[in-house]
Image (cartoon, rainbow, N blue to C red; front, side):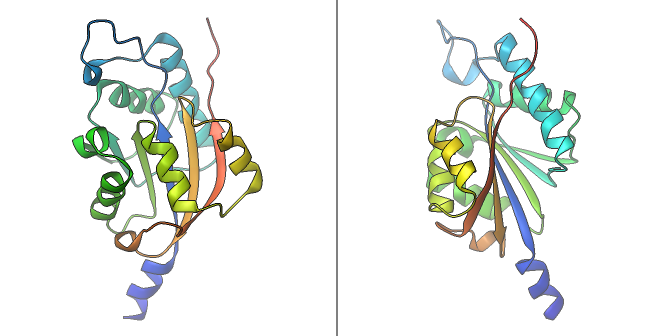
Length: 181
């Protein structure tokens, strides 16, 4: 029993990432929009940054949209890898509450989860989960907007099944930008 409690209470990390810059949707269904060249560079830079920071997910939960899938692919090209990736339509279709429920259901016993999704859900979920707690600098950076390739790093102590509003602290907010033209 004590072992189970310490596992549930240990520090966890939730990484909320907005997909990288996508192409304009001219005549294409939203779900099928692909990354723009800048988006590919930015997502690859995000992968490098995550790897350099030691923020390696045990599980990736990714929207089913083409641009989020491609964001994850480019993050991998930047040097970040994980064995477990789940593609969830609920992250594409759902708002904050449905996305939160997906995390609760899918995260299991993992310690670090990366969710690749969309705005305004990523910004809303970050705000609701942290309720102003955490790094002042991170909250100030987030206050400038949850732009494409933005990454919110949240700390959480508890069971993923109990993840709820106001239970996390925002420790960092990073925006990755790649090089090139």
